[in-house]
Length: 301
Image (cartoon, rainbow, N blue to C red):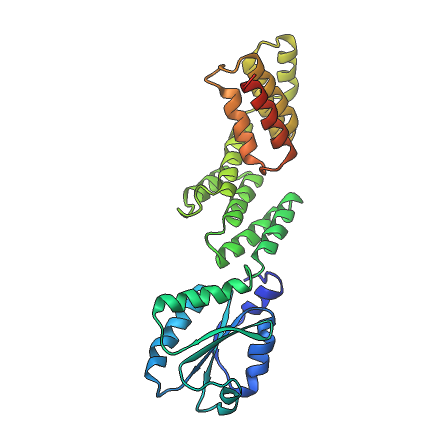
């Protein structure tokens, strides 16, 4: 498992463990500077503790490293229980950045247990996953495809419904030229993120990549368009070939020109291709913003 920054690095340790009061400073106060820590004060003879403890453990385990939990037997660790004014059990405290930040006493419904753990886990952010995604994106941009892929996969191991990481896996396969594998990954997208913007962008990139595989030589297509500017198929194919070569701006220009000349050609293929290109880029990309403005101006002219 990769360590995603300081927070996630701390979270790679066992998320649930029994501790003594001698370990409290290290396992709770210091550890909570990296990731929130829930402390369950309990005793073997406590009936409600036997119900609450497993519920807490299940919720903490489901948080996948975003929060840790320690269990303190009050019979064996009376001094720390007294210092924290634990008067009855079960008592649960949450610590973050070395300070108690939340807590409750007594048995509570499972829904409240789950809400408590989620609230505490959210205090620590996403466990460094955003930084890991950014690192993987940089790897992919630099052509370090295997490393990017492994990092994206590791992020999904921590958070299976991370749309950015899922998109990154697809785009890594596209960059490696393995379009069938990219298609297979997209087909298995979790329902919750199947239509999230990053996943839709990856789907658009895959469509463009498949078109690029069939694109003709740029030189020949450019000559055909120059010889006959009204050759719409040649202009469309030229845009596809230019996009395949990385000249996205050139592709957009020719598609806009084609739309200007005949917006209904081939059932509006120019507009559809433009929207696919825009969807494959980030929404705030200057090419997208400029291209959408130009397209809108033509549509409403």
